[in-house]
Amino acid sequence: MGLWRRCSCPGLPPWLAAAACRVARWGFRNAWPRAATGPVPTAAQLPLEVLPLQQSADLAKEALRQARRFAPPFRAALVAFGADGQLNGALLQLQVTHMFSDGFSIVPLLADLGHLIAQAEGVLLPPLAPVPNVLAALEKRLIRTINGDESMRDIITPEPLVRGPTRDKVTIFATLPEFEVTALKRHARTLGISINAVMLAAISVGLAYLEERDSVPVVLVVPQRDGPAESDLVGLFADFRLLRVSCGGLSAMGVALQLHHLIRDRLWLAPGPFTQFSHPWVNFQWTDFEAHHGLRQINDLGTWSGHLSNPISIVVEQQDELSWRLCANFDAKKYSPEARERFFKGLVGTMENLVSDPVALAWPPAPAAEGSEPQAPPATAATGSEHERPPVTAAARGEQQGPPATAAAGNEQQG
Image (cartoon, rainbow, N blue to C red; front, side):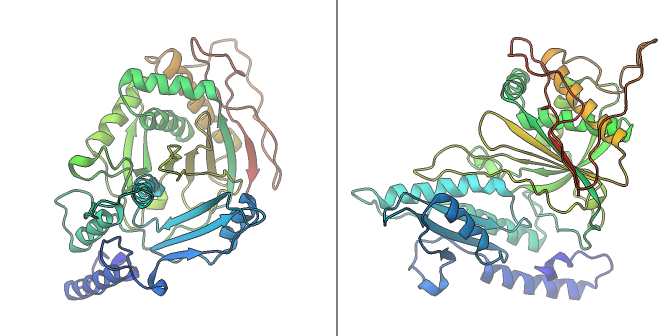
């Protein structure tokens, strides 16, 4: 893996790059797990780690956390739970290195596993036929990447050769309540675009307010699709891509439609090997709530937001189908409390406009009315402290009215 990451190094001799590719290709073919209809491998070769029976679901989760550390490229761990010898359920943990695929791949993986379970529980099992599966499709993509085959425009972007330095950060957890999520989804359906484009539009305008310029770069984890069956592989093969989002002179709806076309037509760039951590980073961590023959994805929202290498990282995630949470990490040295407040002002204002006045100008912001009183500086979190702030809301016409729109939300903490 390390060899392949350096194959595209500027100035690497062609013969050395070719040799590294051959070694990396052999390593991928021997390390990546396969799903096949051939003989079942021995127990020592199975990539599934089975942990001892636990008394409850909470203890099962803790057992998974304390199990051996993840070693790329793939790990699967299973732990059953139940009291007094009764099996009440089980947790299956699947881990795939982010270099190959994003968490979106859990959707087709669960569908494949659910299909196999349904077959195993059937009274009459039909003859097994080779079925295209997630890992086989991903493996083909790896080989195309190593060989430099760009015919399908889906090759993997190498991870940066040098990771950016860890930054001192301020983390803000902002909650989007149910009525706000419903209003944004309704607006996305009205425009005929994905909810990702709508949320990314609000985030992009927030970044324009933060940086005080009308065009902003965004490093986005973009779903990659393969071939004619793209509707069957929803969100599979996520990868890092660099978008240039223009907000100047556009309405909130205009920014959303611009992003829809950029992503649909793949008008993005691959971030350079040294520049990926120089731009704002956005990721959507959606949860698959559909049950796949007993398999259902669960998501326990944590309070630890990880290390910060980008100047700002934004993650949109969900624990249930009714509400979302936005985790924003800011470089504490680069962005002052006033700058962070500008970001949330643009974010919330755009969400308000999307559901109530979509043609309102997104950027530049409207000038303050003459005679208006200056606002007090926003409250900030002292080092190591946390405090509660109201949820992010944008009042929707015809929707239940929640708390007034605020410039920041959730817990703010210094990290």
